[in-house]
Length: 332
Image (cartoon, rainbow, N blue to C red; front, side, top):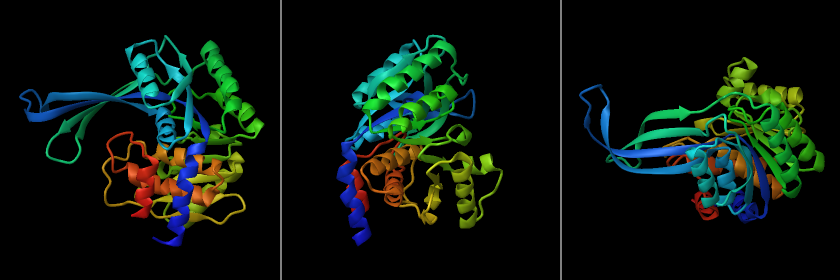
């Protein structure tokens, strides 16, 4: 192991000492797994014989789950419906150690649910054959938005950082973003966001993350080389008045553009054992936030996040990693 990797290893135990308020769109990920027995006579699709069903907290609950799995403390603010899926999601949050203190029930909309139909065979993992989403993308307003804002002001003073996970299904409107800045950054808390392309909403945040496609679409440019990534990051730094921009690039790794620092890029830690990229960006933001709280600095936080993403893509679905798994991944 090189000296640089040893230094990264030394930071892992320090990720467990911090509390994060995660604000965003909460999902219930529903996995239905069956054995592909034959082809249907009704359509060119496999007929699955049911084997099992399980649930995973998704959306903004996924970075919160990652924080808990690494020994941190996570509280979530978001919406669920007054339905069976909402009850199931609350149960899943508690099962993995996430504090649901900021969850608001909205009876006029369903709990966002993503049902994945998986076929199990001789391969290492089941393969997804279909996905059915139930969601309402309307921006919340009125009393519901006021409740979310009140939860931010109530819970933000007692945490070390606020992480926004904006999946653009209505929970994070302008009033909620302003509440995060007032109650979070206004009190000296680290404020980070996985903007999922909605970069314009997050002026004044400490760290903003997006992936290549999101940034190309937002900025109206095609990234053909490192100069393009650097130029795009610098543009967002100035336009949004943010402290740093992280660009996740899939198999190409991660790039960091920060004020008063040189542009940095790290190749992907794992390019050969990629099974499922679902939730990798959530892991990046969870690890980067914890690392910054530990005092690691932006370059180290980005490297740790890059390693973590390379680990979770080897797992099925919205996966998380433990500190022991994290250490082994860097060690090896």
